Length: 562
RNA sequence: UCCCCGAUGGUGUAAUGGUAACACACCGGUUUUUGGUGCCGUUAUUCCAGGUUCGAGUCCUGGUCGGGGAACCA
Image: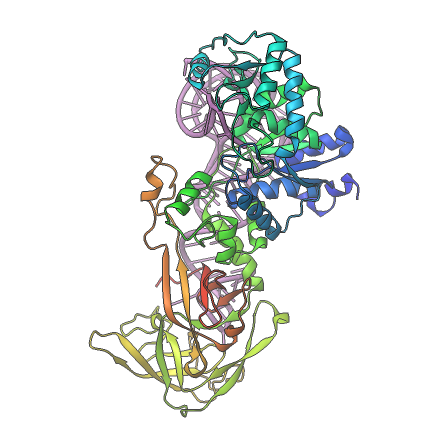
């Protein structure tokens, strides 16, 4: 497929975002021979979250759209915070999302040797020097926005001396913090990052990949552009916060005379009622405010997966939020919409009663079991059908019966008639309450000739209720989730505020829920619609064959204003 | 105080000097053996002031507001 084919076709009607426009311009002008290579460069110091999912979809999606490929590169230049646990989790999440790093898997640490050589090159070109001052001293010389900085006393150190000291740093002859290597740029630049930034520091810390091989580690700015360049990345896409870094990114590439990768920044994803900072997510985990990185309330990919989100829904969501340069806050309802939209088409429907009370059909003989046919998914005829046991004693939802009701009430009540989904129309007879007025049982009679699909009774029922036959039900636990934070902007206030903003009711555990028998076969990864209730999936952590545990991914949209 | 970026309905995104549109949310109607889905519809938008132009959301100037920017983090 030529690039032009990718540009034409059905997709061409969709408006292009600013990066797509730029790429099409690049292709048209023959830049890099039309080659497109992007990269996704996570630091392995935390789990991927929904914000990363957007970045992933942008970098992978753009490459795919224009006939290119994408590299996965672990940006592991700071061994203090990084570990192989995170590397594995990131790989797993990427694969689950359905992305394939066809360009290959790389690590910035693969380039430590080349980066060291680049540093020597800068020293030899008089563009880097070793500074032996303390961090505080260097900070004070940095100046301030609007005020130029002053030069380090070591700024004009002789080339040979710089080289020797840097080689000694590498050889481990100097202690942590005793020396750094700095780029020699411009101490009065308006961009503070260009005021002789530190590019190498000493750290006597084992690296999760290179072990004790190195005691000097490159800083982000000295590693990122060069790594892009080494891999021949054509379009290096990152978030807005790196805009100020672009001049530095370009300065290194130009000074070293290496392949000119080009950085373009776009706005990261923000979601209301959600925190996206890795540091704060880590805090939630460490303080046990949640059940680990994959708690179903977490915005992590692993949390969303455990909750019942599908990769398709997440990718659709990422597509819909768009790519632009202005800061944004997406409404979580868009994420939920994407899930419902996907699951409505695909999820098998089953019956489950979360807060069960007895429903006794008086005119059905006890012991009688009738197997009724029901569609697995009315949206998808291919999904087929199954049978459901029906009998005298059923479970119904406590919420579906009320004594005092108005005309908007469609469900069961004294004097009312409702249809039991895929079964019969039933009419109220009486009910039993306990001392506190809690309804324990509702008694109804089945309307003759009202069987689902062959109803000739002429009786019309406004409401339809879900139910489960008591004789064949499976008892299980169901976990309902609400948003983790009460405030729409939990990161907005003071830094520590987000922990005080936790929603105390974000997790509700229901036991004694009654499920239809087919759910005994439920397996991890399949998401079901519990009729009238929402989408649910088996919890991958706590569910056992003897005691199933389900998570609610999202409710059904509730149109009832009752 | 200085530098960079941005500003279009409630929330996002488009309109590339020529009728401000699409999605989500909201509200209403309709269909429905899920108060779901589907279908139809309502409400609502160019930060401000000048300028250029036959014509400005778009270009220019100035302002306002928001975000980012000083780490031996990425």
